[in-house]
Amino acid sequence: MTKLRAKKIFGILREYYGKINSQLSYSNLYELTIAVVLSAQTTDKQVNSVTPSLFRNFPDFKKLSEAEIREVESIIKSVGLYKTKAKNIINLSKMIVAGYNNILPNKIEELLKLPGIGRKSANVILSMGFSIPAFPVDTHILRIANRIGYIKSAEPDKVEKILTEYIPEESWIESHLLFIKHGRVLCTARKPLCSKCPVNQLCDFVNILSNIS
Ligand code: SF4
Image (cartoon, rainbow, N blue to C red; front, side, top):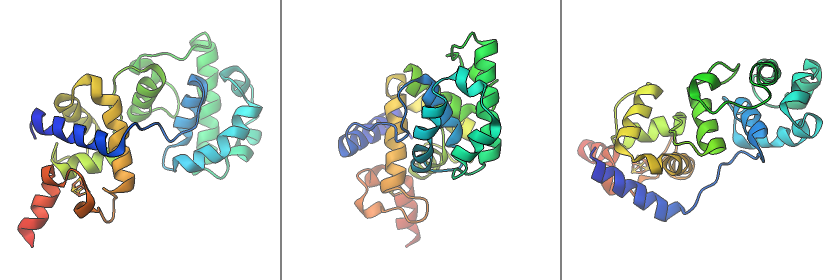
């Protein structure tokens, strides 16, 4: 990989997919944070199906911090790992209210102290919630970074480091969204549609396949 190649890939994907928004539905930092915690190991669509009811009943950290766990569980039970997630979002809300004066922190070190928030989730909150440049590495990003040839690694932290070296900071947020879109539409886990891919001329995976055949 070179910075020039990374720049070309970004430009091509940007032109191909256009402007991308997050697939999670939220209208403020509270809703984003809760939606992000709920989204672990499930689809954004599934999360979006339960959050309207959750946010109607518990519209902010304060209300959610006072919630009965059973009630929260019953609202989010169609989402995977709902028992753990119900506990996490209530405890997280208690911490925000009691420890942060009801204001979500915008520092990764502080976000990582909250229940249910790992590095990827913290980076999503920073980038989507605060517009602070960050590069969350989820399963799509991990796969695409390896296939295209930014790095060969299954470790999200290493992938994040290399992507943030090759891609300029001002493009991190958009690149993250473009890669996720690309992972859902063409560079899918099981069967990537390489012949239709706009960056196939710049992708190591295609070269490897053509060398094998
Ligand atoms: S050429 Fe294939 S493997 Fe490479 S980015 Fe495109 S879809 Fe993914």
